[in-house]
Length: 136
Ligand code: NI
Image (cartoon, rainbow, N blue to C red):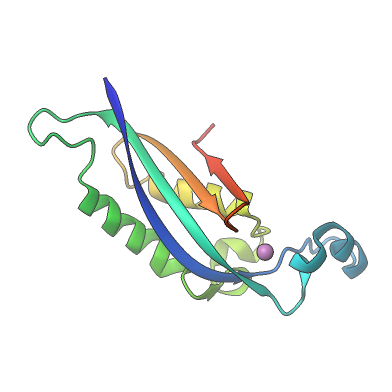
């Protein structure tokens, strides 16, 4: 029997979608307003889900306090109120689309969560646009 436990989180960040190999005109065509050279911000909402067996002694799949602290240290402190392109090392060379951000977050958390637990991350870039990644 496996149960999924989830924790919601939040961060504000600025970004610009941009392919350095392309002209400004092509970037503007493909990415539209999201390629504004002066950046723009999003209120990102994050849902981190962990799936596994209930531990017989604690009754927990994972201690939510530990998951909360992990998201705070590994994600919120690194991304919140940052310019992703300029202040988060990986996005200096990786376009900070929602797709790429969710993979970066998953990779970051995966190394810190017990291997016996399945990890899935959903990232809302707007209330209507969201992406999910579970390591496939
Ligand atoms: Ni954007």
